[in-house]
Length: 353
Image (tube, rainbow, N blue to C red):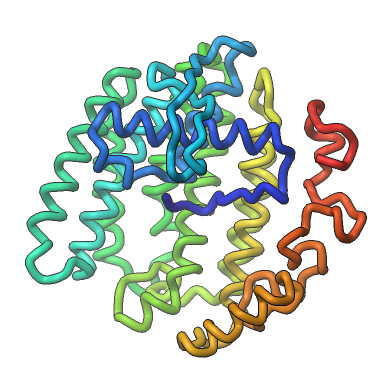
């Protein structure tokens, strides 16, 4: 599972976290049902937003759900999940497979495939591409155009140089995500939302591309791999400005769309997007990566202080105590740490989660 949206239970109401997990597990199981167990590797935290957007536009109770059996990632507990019959889940699965296929081809192009695995990765990319096209056809989405956009990304990267604007490199991703977001309006029978959601998709695609580049920049430079920020000589300050502008544009675009229930949409695409931006740029401000000895020692110290002490390279270093402590649910510090759940979630009882 990968992506920029990684919500934590301490940051949201239990009911919203349960709804998010229903979409996450539903996407994983839809990939399994549509393409086999191996396709579950393409489960993506970000593409499940397509499923969330579709359901948020539907009248309450109309989206199909089912009870899934025990899963190791849920502590071997059953759970209510979005059913694979749901159009949003199938669209999310199709987009996940097509994007994962493009990522595999990108790895091969960057020379990241180990010796003897290039052909295997290409075959897997072809299978996932075919599976994504099949799932997309079932919900009326043009996967061919999406795949062409993903392939165009590789062409743009090959011709990029210092004079290339970084937004030129993010444009194909923006177009791909915009098409997927807009199609959720068609699946939900809300054509009036298509334009606003396409705009939201463009901004989210830009964010996802830029934040991925920010997080990978040091590693890409160390091994000589392509990174859009490095190639275009974009400084971290400019990258952050672009990300913050995109996050603001995303929020404005979402405000123009009509939803039956927008709680989860806002939690993921407004609150968690803001956290993702802060997280990415906090990491770039830290000093060089520590070795395993220092990491092990720091891990022991962090464990025995319940998280109150954090090493300087930790993403939580310098944050308030309630955000560093392992028991940072508010019980130790008598504060509300659930992102204003009192006002955003009617099922919360006050600030006590």
